[in-house]
Picture 1 (cartoon, rainbow, N blue to C red):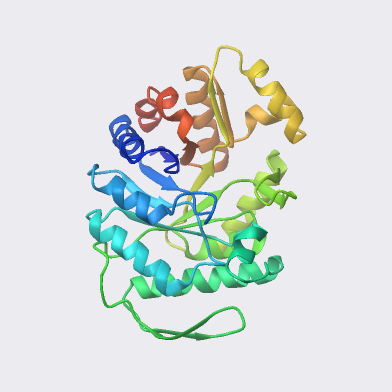
Picture 2 (cartoon, rainbow, N blue to C red; picture 1 turned 90 degrees about the horizontal axis):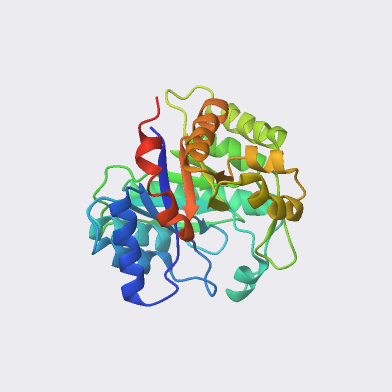
Length: 308
């Protein structure tokens, strides 16, 4: 089954945020996912708890929490509390982080890529073990916990789904082995602003990333789900014209841009066909779209959910 989630942050009033949550649930979105960028976005777990109070079925999670600056004990407690107040709808999203300012803001320097990956793996493993009710002790240069336990609150779900968002080869392999969902953004080197990235959206890039996931998943009875973070959605009768400016900006041909799962442009029929094609070609069955796409994609959701 193909599902769509809405990626959004609480940037206006409380009334606007809870109304967004209601609309996303009514439209048939599978989850409401909030970014986790301290100082640049609302705290996801507080915002999602407010969304939980006005919804009943939609999943709720961060997409994704920066393992470099989040401590496992506090992250596990936030996720468990969200699961409790939402009646068992929390999702756990973790990534290695990329924004240097977030490390500086908590008095640290951003590690190199290898260091960020090691920390992300250690944090993801520790949080999952804490949520599972284990006592966790870790003593490494990347992470320290001593006799940590999450006695209360306990999650409602027996096992909270774990999404690992990454484009790093090592972390893709780990996610293939351990995550419930691998979040694909196709992003490369972080640009000087600390937030934007080069993109790895060509077919060869996607195939290389999925090969790493498959290598990690070898031996699993059930492979992780694959989710694409869609950077732009536009319902239009002229997809090529709509794609031209973005294609120039990211250094792709229009054809290559329209072929990537990170962009959905065209008529409703063309978008449904593109989603079906991404599922056949890449095995991607989950798509996370930005808040401006909420209404435009609403008519598409029942159609993609019914794809054979």
